[in-house]
Length: 77
Image: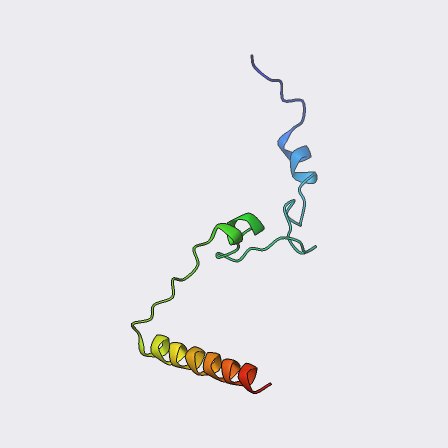
């Protein structure tokens, strides 16, 4: 089915808009390449803790020291 063009090209040019119809200046749209929705953020894989690294070993030492201090505080009180 063919469509009829009732307007001339000059009439279409008069209707031309200066601003884009999909402007994001009003806010509420994130154009960042790493933008994620809430569901995607919840589904994102958490980084697995690795105790073999230097930072991991220091973390374990800190946690064990805090545990011993906490147990010592329980015994004294």
